[in-house]
Length: 468
Image (tube, rainbow, N blue to C red; front, top):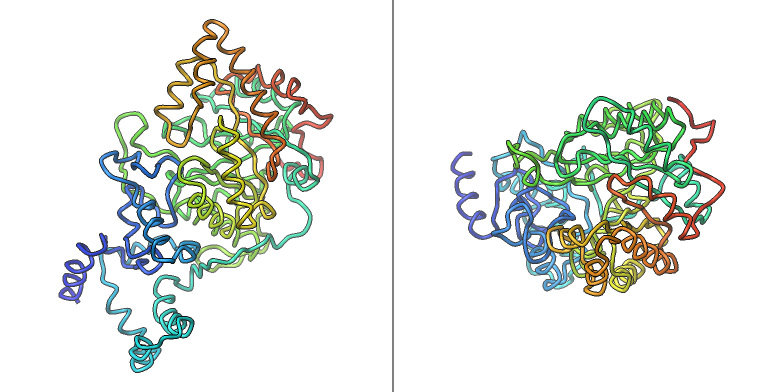
């Protein structure tokens, strides 16, 4: 056994960048090992990296964009849509070839060998799938590349209800406090709740600890304002994720936003272990969708009362070329995402190209899109976002406007935000905006009213959904 492990490591390492995870996915990832990703992502790139570089390790290119490029060249882009499982750590460091041989034996060695000479691609693929699919898709996961619509009827949250009714919604973020006091948090919630459909609470943004999103959601619920629970894969194990969802559902939290989370690389010192990532955001969506629709935990245990969830995912439209980014979005939809919350957008024309690629894949009919908008506070902020934050591009004209604004930079930033909203809200597939004011909750009212987005409704939780 050790000899087989050593041989596999020596052969697959140089050829494919194999990390000996014990659950080989090479056939689905264009024969490039996804475990080369510093964040260990097995279902596509994070929102922070670009086609030029990995933001965790800037000395190397993002391995997932290399996978995308090779898959496109080989005509295997459809393979990238399969929802791949998290690692079975009991198998980490072990060989896979022995399992392949045993599976070939089950299928029939003659049948498998004969498939090597079959010209019919469909028949050949069928035989190979019978060998390799059981290896990469264990029974406890059983991922696929199909779209799974929600199994429930109606809506489970006020946010989902408004979106389903065709309302152009506005959601916002309130920054969790640094301390145990919730006085400022409550003030901020009260300021924004009359003007938004739901309030998102970030989960240790920039890998810096703050009050948990779960605790903030509880406070929001007590103030009768609909919350969105944000969950960063960076800080969650598969066990912790499932337990937290069952817990917050009991508190009346229905809206969930699954994100990969910023790498500890950009967080404060001392830096935590970068190699620990139990699950990624797509795997989170898959696990939560199955909990909701099938009433099962990841280990197969049944639950009598499954959680009610409106599942969302984050997206960065400008992180890669639109056609590659659309594959990533389609995969999230297949995993269970019902709405997208985008990164900050300052280029409506570029957003249009991304939306067109989503439309080609019929994504716009399956998910609601909330476009990220933020009023620039200063020219310095504009420079930081443009040059230092991957996936965000600010056109030169806007940069010049902010530079010339001087002491009136915030007012100019609000004007730019209003111009963006006016342009974006007319685009096909856009269902609303996600307003990020980065601690300036006091300007939320001004932006929403001047944008003509004020409604008689607010972020109040309907009486029949209260359970806090």
